[in-house]
Image 1 (spheres, rainbow, N blue to C red):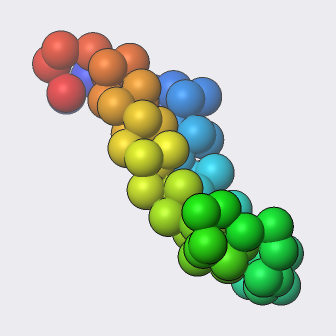
Image 2 (spheres, helix red, strand yellow):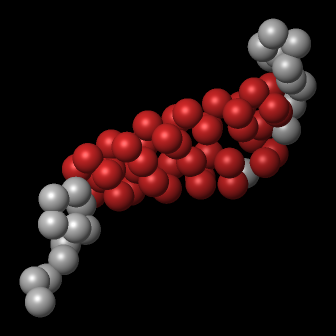
Length: 65
């Protein structure tokens, strides 16, 4: 069985976790975006960002994984 090595790109998957872990960082009402308080749109912004990061890590994997 071949030895697997982790790519440094896997660290990208920690960004959404760390970005949402500390609630006191984004527990604010301003600035608002189209009427949404910062607390909500900051979290919603992570949905497409996380999708892009997962895609980048997925495309970096070799075909045999």
